[in-house]
Amino acid sequence: LALIRSALDAGRSAMLLVPEIALTPQLLHKMTAHFGKAVAVLHSSLRVGERYDEWRRIARGEARVVVGTRSAVFAPLQNPGLLILDEEQEHTYKSENAPRYHAREIALYRGAKERALVLFGSATPSIETMYLAKTGVYSLYTLKTRYNGRALPDARIIDMKQELRAGNDLDLSRELEEGIRDAILDKKQSILFLNRRGNSRYLVCMDCGDVPQCPRCSVHLTYHSSGRRLMCHYCGFSQPVPERCPACGGPLKTIGTGTQRVQEELEFLFPDMETDRMDADTVSAVNTHEKILEHFQKENVPVLLGTQMVAKGLNLPNVTLVGVLDADLSLYTGGYLAGETTFNMLTQVVGRAGRGDSPGKAIIQTMVPDHQVIRYAAEQDYDGFYDLEIQLRRVQNAPPFGDLAAVVVTGREETAVLRGAAKFRDSLIACLRQEAYREERCAVLGPAPCAVPKVNYHFRYQLTLRCRLTRTMRQLLSYLLREFGKDKANRGVSAYIDVNGFD
Image (cartoon, rainbow, N blue to C red; front, side):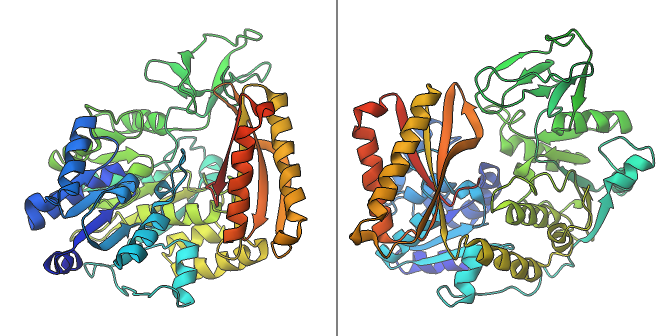
């Protein structure tokens, strides 16, 4: 706030970006209290007319402070002097649709062009950002204590294998259940975090082992108990739950856990307790993030259950207990960011507890209680995690030591997609053999199917490039991409390049 005020006093404007739309209402209230009508908000949940009005206010110079999510980085601010990215490590700052920009890189570009200060804020900075700070490229400022001087939450790791051996097949451990009861008696609130929506991961036939699949995508359908439907989280396809297995007529059993199922368990364990749930199924244009959080705070609802929407940035002083279910969910996703994503998510959600006058407590449930990443997250030891992760990145030649670029080729005909990917690979290898690219070091892997090979009837193959994306390399890839689009043999097939992507 002081930095924004100093920028305004110097006749310049300021921007504050957050990773989730859920964080904008709380922040907007605070910003308008300080800067009044000079504040504009931009995010994708605004109606088109509202977004246009805010855009016009910014362009005319009426609004000199912009609050928003990643797309707000393009706001037409007049003479920006300060650009702040809160929780800069979040992957939501990277667009998954064309153009595949990263708000962090756009902010750095705008800062350099306008001679503005760019500030990255985080309790768990991304490995690349911290590396640049430690090597002197960025300036590093460290807060040694928690913002309000409070002690960090006391974190406990629960081994769910022991819970199963003891006969507890619920998703809530006995200690977490007791913690919720104690919080209710103390008139305090709890947050439960599970990064999977729906009721169960999928249904499986007990006789033949068949699992209902999405007809458009190569993924299992997720079971949603509300309305008893099977849904695809990639293309939106849904169908009613069959009474018996369509293949053999056998009985169907649910496998895995989602937020809906945890809510049902809470209703079973605490019949008279109200629970708020915040995930992609409950948030809508009518029932917004703002309404859910406002209801949770004003009505003093005992439990807020949710996905990553509840994991970061929220300042809820009455929350004294945080429970993490399936803490290892993102640990084995296969991408080079798996460890960092898990550590950041756990550290952030644990930090939601004990932000008021009462001390906080966190209970982390996992099947791998001795995993180093989970241990470091429970201890809130960022330096220990950074030292571990930077060694792995150096061995892998992953960012910040190298770049990983995925050339993804998609289309409805699998043979055409595979042929197009192979053609792109051959063109790239032929170019790299030329004298002009002799200095470029690039290993080309693939083509191979993507992690999800088919989405909405479109097959997806990718080439993986291990290289350093120098200016020359970027120009070469851009040229090959344009040539790929012009080639009539690739009709019906499209390609894009994703740099250092989440997968």
